[in-house]
Amino acid sequence: MGRNILVVDDSPTLRNSLSFCLENASYNIIQSENGQEGLDMLSRFMEDGRSVSLIITDINMPVMDGIRFIREVKATSFRYVPILVLSTETEREQKDKAKEAGAAGWLNKPFRTEQLLWVVKKFIR
Ligand SMILES: [Mg+2]
Image 1 (cartoon, rainbow, N blue to C red):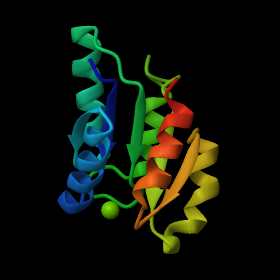
Image 2: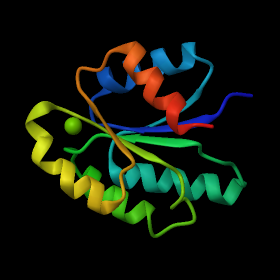
Image 3: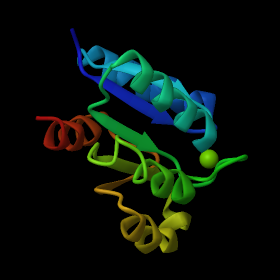
Image 4: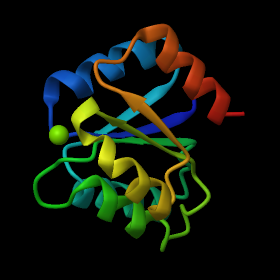
């Protein structure tokens, strides 16, 4: 069975293209459209005793943004799951905040498939 990757982004197009690329590489994708939904998903995973190998999150999202989401994840039992931030060039100033909050890496939108898979493989052992 493939490893579980949680994708958190408010753009359905982005979520779907990420899922397409990663599912082709045999990963199992769980989608959430904002930080709060992502956290809810993680607590369901915890209740079911399922694991998450990687989290990929956007920064700008309604309800709960990526920075707060990362901080909240770090206060759960999923704190050791690596978190990659996927964001636009203009959100660069958020990079330091994301790192401070505990993000492990950064990918720019639009992403290239080979680059995405390279980074994902680097973080999922
Ligand atoms: Mg967004």
